[in-house]
Length: 137
Image (tube, rainbow, N blue to C red):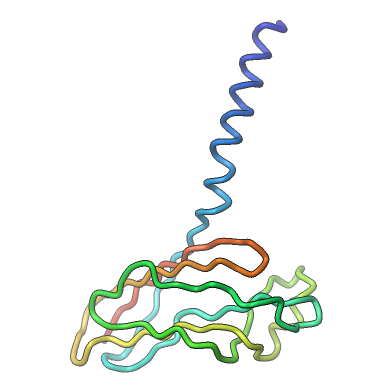
């Protein structure tokens, strides 16, 4: 029995080491927005906050792909956060705080679908990708 358990445990440990880093660094969220052609639409906003709602530090936000039929502006501005109710920072959701937001604008007269992917590396070490599919009318 000892001979069987050792290879199985070793395999599970190696599998865990191989899967965990990828799972932690490749969290991808997909959203859909609708925009009017040639007009800005807000599709992302975020901030890293301390428990007292003060800024923890700036997040690194970058466009990694798209859009094919327009452009994206990343702007340091006031944003609403979206912490879960169980998070000590949930009270910060009630007011705008300093953060970064992303705005998409299609090329003039474009109508159809576009897509933007942004990567976010938070001040406290989390990493995400946000894929936004945008229906332009």
